Image (cartoon, rainbow, N blue to C red):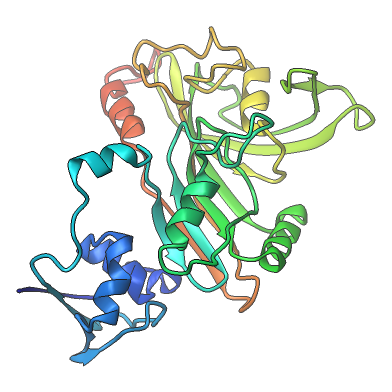
Length: 318
């Protein structure tokens, strides 16, 4: 038996200091193994055994985990092959909500084609490992090719409360994107009305009578010769909003297969996903009222692109 110890660092925000979340983040323990370790008394906090996954820790608390050689059998190679190829990182979890980091190229919920493998199904499957009656309810969505922070409710009541916050534009939603060309002006507020055609494509229309209001704030953080890195904040949350509005001004998101797809191609973006990531999400907890702010790291594809593009500054820059 080996033991691992660590202290809760100050850079973990209070909503993420639940024991289960800290065990995942500090010790890299798979979520499926945490509950058995807790139940078997293998986790101590400041020298005392803790079995409550939702126990909230303080900065500086000392955590020890007895890592027994094989407390939980690792899946065999054949078993792994039978599992879905995708996994979901859980950023926060309590009795009411779960916040996850959605991977790119995964539907949030099924379309009219009734796909079985979606983010919501993966989350529900994972939750049911701890509670066979667990349910997962969609609150908001990210497009298939988009990654990032997304909150899921565990009851219809909580889902409705969160949806109301989104309807009132309360959540703080920040995205990052890499787009074709350099937007001018480098910072702006885009206001358009969006409608939908028979193939579910979104497009800009001239008036409120014809579509839904969409408001997007963008700011250029880095400009290269033929692409730019943007920080984007949503005021409204229409389907495909960011993609449509940026394509409308001539700067589609790299890798977007739908909106100005030819212009969205870039020699340094070979990835089968869009260069759009939901970096952070802030909202009020629907039960406690506590302010929750969750943030994720930039995807590796973004970091690689930015590192490579440093030498390609716009003409005239030095």
